[in-house]
Length: 142
Image (spheres, rainbow, N blue to C red):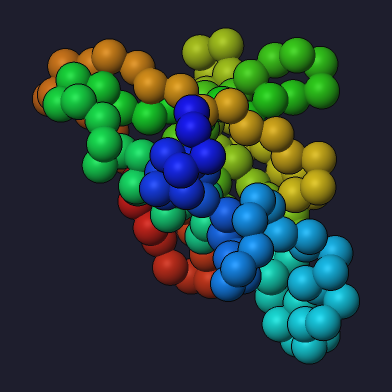
């Protein structure tokens, strides 16, 4: 993908942009100049979940009628949970409800070690489902 196409693609666009700066911004530098309250909010699991929900919504808009996004939460033992919903669990943790080996499950992780894989899946239009994102008592479906 060309650098110009990268800047037009909302999935690859950085969350923070600085006028006149190319490439990814130095997050450490930005956080060093950010007031503590804003920095605390920026680093929160709630902000992470909101950004993820927004990204999945934008991605879904570009998919074909017979496709849907799938999110897998990757576990340290190599297993993967198919995510049905993800939400904040306090300031720095996320909780996932999903399916692991055909059984319903719940997984709680600190956001720093939380890894996701997102891909698309062909599905009959009547079988499409949304993924729930829970932040501050609000539910966002994507």
